[in-house]
Image (cartoon, rainbow, N blue to C red; front, side, top):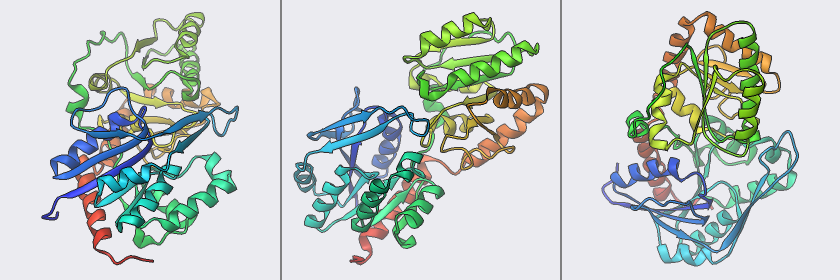
Length: 383
């Protein structure tokens, strides 16, 4: 877009698990001559060789709670004010802080000292626990007042920033950064898949933890198996719930229906999407799951829990999939049964998925992000 190179600094409270998604976008930025540096409290186990990443002093913890509305618990980032010095040392053109943590506050101070702009990235409409917390609401509105602009990943995120945090619409740039990698990137490692004894194949990809609600999918499969339907369930991933889920399958006589594949490298999961017929995410809470976007990019119908951020935003009930209550496996089973009985729906819904995800490309994300940054830099300070 512009002739001069941009220097961006991204501030993450934690990159323990999310770098593989962000790395694709950062690589696309660098190819567009946009420099990328990253500060984080919690680094990933593996860092991309071309990424400039620095660990900042601090503590990142997830406080576990026994709550149906917040099954993942609350993330707390205690970040040292030394982050200010790190930002001053980098001297970027713009700082992009991820969400509304203490790291965002220190970033705002550094930006004021440097006379540069701060963007806050907001991925989606916040989870229920954030909406119900008056203190969190006050904190977020305060940060929104001292930020210069916002990158909203979805239209729901934009609505939240404007209506929930009081930002002006002119400050908020709709930029779908969280987008699926190109199919070839997920198929670099060809995974040897078994022959299919029967179709359709219902696929789950994700961590095997209680919050993902995989037991709902297994219970739905048991209902359909009891009715005599022939189909497969493939489960890709590993986690603390694996042993219990495997035992559940054995006890309920689903060993010929359900297959566990364990951990699959990210560059190899495309083979599973390509050979499946529908994707199922029975999560009890997910912010904006990338697996749904990946499945859509492979042209799959998506059966998604009502507790996922994708429900209603990316997955439209009856169009490119179904939205269900993970506390009622029979509801999921009914939608799976519909796809088994009417296989033509799989193709129709799959094509709709592909059409809906088409604008979510890395190229569009880079173009919109650069436009947002240059617009913000060139604008007069709003305070």
